Image: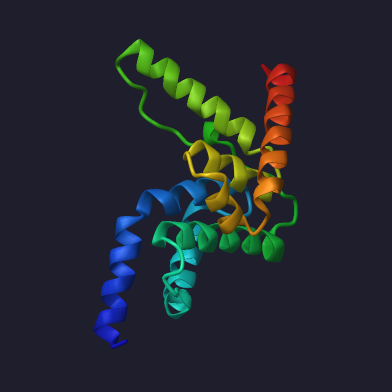
Length: 167
């Protein structure tokens, strides 16, 4: 692959999947890992890993796996306390419509609960919320399809416990 082809592929993937990368980076942001640091790290690993993409899976599946693994690895190397920021710490302009505001509050609350999960649980539930099939979740996370189902069941119970204990 020529340098120009590599640059074009990098830009196509990084520009075409900004929301995916941002979502993963927000989930793994913490007091010790800012969103910007994680996003930059994912882009670096994307550039370095372009040659490893074989086309066996969709680009989005490969990129999810790369982004999640990058963020988890960053935390293993650098995190001293594991304090995760919730999306409540990210300011956003409230919507004018009261119904939209309620939905936004519910989404922020759900993400604050998800931020309390361990890294693999965050990955599994986020992919499930993105309506990824169990087989794709298994491929991205590196666990079996059956384990995805078991983990999702346990995650739902854990989130329910968090919600009843904090709300």
